[in-house]
Image (cartoon, rainbow, N blue to C red; front, side, top):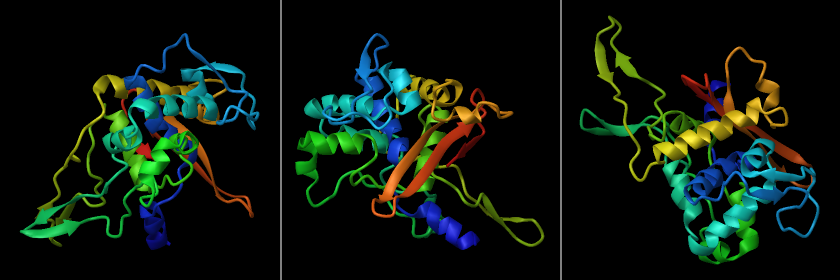
Length: 265
């Protein structure tokens, strides 16, 4: 039903590899995505066991396109050693922490359009400081596992933010309210989300990475390359129940790539 679909979009879920977008944005700002650097993507995230998918030696760009866990975990650990709060900072820059839905005053009364929207979280709040110092937890969180929880609407808004060049806006479910004769009762204005934003250069580099996921022959989203529109985005698979092998399979992105009009999850 429509109601259950809306509730699903507003509920916290484990995003899996879609969350690598956050770590990648931070890595660009910290200069860790240098083209000449390669990563051993035959290894798992701990560097001790082989990866489930052996991808060989990959650059950062190819690692993102092919969703190599080892690369994202490794750069995540490097950043966490000097900037332990980087995941929250970049998740906030991309609009994943806090609420995405439009809120404000309508005729002096507070209005929230996306009722019951759940706010995103990166760490377990009971032991967040301890987790940030544990490099195993950092690696898992950097690739969207462990305690990372975000809503699908927030992920779609993250993609819209990147497509707009870093500008965060509140998500509107309703643009305006009208009387039956067509006269306007209230028009909901576009509103930005406060706090720090992604730098335009970083957003541009993220646009390129997200496009490579689809355009690269080995990219995890290459099956979308034949569509009439050029799509940019990120795939993700999150295990939600190990015993039953239940998975959340994600694709989040935007299109058309060069003149974006739609974001999706």
